[in-house]
Length: 578
Image (cartoon, one colour):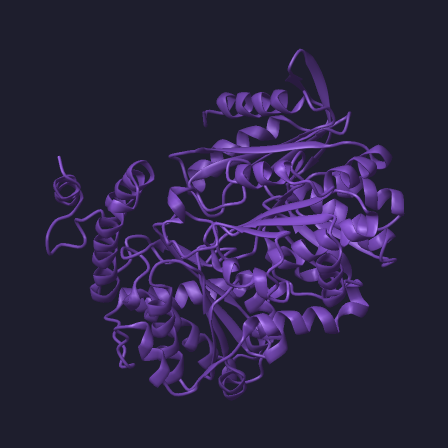
């Protein structure tokens, strides 16, 4: 059977001609991408044809999203064409405009947003960008059209990363930013992130306001009279739109705040380029970071800077586009073959707010790297202050802070929960590979993580794995892991089931492998975290973004982690979730 015949059968299987709602375009695309993986580029033309159908749906869909619009910790996410399309994006942007229109009569709202009036918000305007997702420019054009019609200045970054756009808000003194990204979600997703004037993830009161406005608009007969955006080029004719270089804003912010964090962007890049004993390999997984890494390294053509998956591909080559052990394997292979003694490998997610590291032998997730960054700033950069990490993150940082006699801030999961300590915590990070530092943005940023890793190696003359082992030798070794299960129960029903965990209180015992351990402490700020007498712990919580229950564990021995995972699953079975 020819490629054309196979392709026709697949299109017939997944699509209904003239009916977007009944067609599963991304089910089709995933099949086509799998065939491209097996049989090569001959399948690219059918993939392009399938994406043409998605583009038509994005432009033509005038209905309601299949899922209720909801802004959570990381904004609004949904399926491209089904949930996220021009009409729904215009609706959500209108909801944001309505929110700013209410500022003049609601000073408390203005205080949350960081503006005193609608006129101020319009003048300071919005930083607008998108990641590498399909139709990002088209959807950005729709956002710009609504904002422009509402009298807002639009500072247009084009394709960029979350951390860079956050820096641009601070450097441009913009009122807010909109970034069209679903972060590390699979290829069929689109998304919409909103940050207010502080450049960090929006507070719950703000996201609730946007959600309420959007649902009210969706419940009525929403229409808009903005310039219709049929192509990405339409943004060029809109009023109040000002293109700019967002990466330059990021560089400026890092350099001018050297006094706060001690990092030297130009100095460390220059040092890397001069010495021949270090190699850096960065896997962009086809995301927005592919546009920035060479520029961060002064557009060098140095053979010791290696970029992987740095071409445009909205399908991510068929992989889940996230920093993971599986996705890191090519970086590991390349580093093992290099002769340089100092080796730094990194993998970055599509919107550049998550990063994970390797030196070719030791993989270093944010559980370890965030603690290493704190140790580095405290001891090598001589900066004093607290550390902040989410309650689901490794206690290695706890051990370091206790030894330094510094404070620890430990909020629930979600980067927005660090707001109370922005400007006082040296480092704030979460186990899901997000980090930022004092003097930088209140948003997680892969690039500041990459700069930290480079400066660690330059200062210590060690690979990251060796530096980690040195820290563990002084403060103890911690072995974290996490997992999650999909569940049918949700809302009150799920919370009722999870309440069954209350039987595991302080002083009660739990079977862990062949031993029985006593619970020393219970933390309930986000789900239920049970800390045992030996310092190991397990935590169970409902996901805030997916129909899942997540569990996190940490052992004090390498072999004990699997036993804690088994114990967590046993608890979920006992209360009727598994």
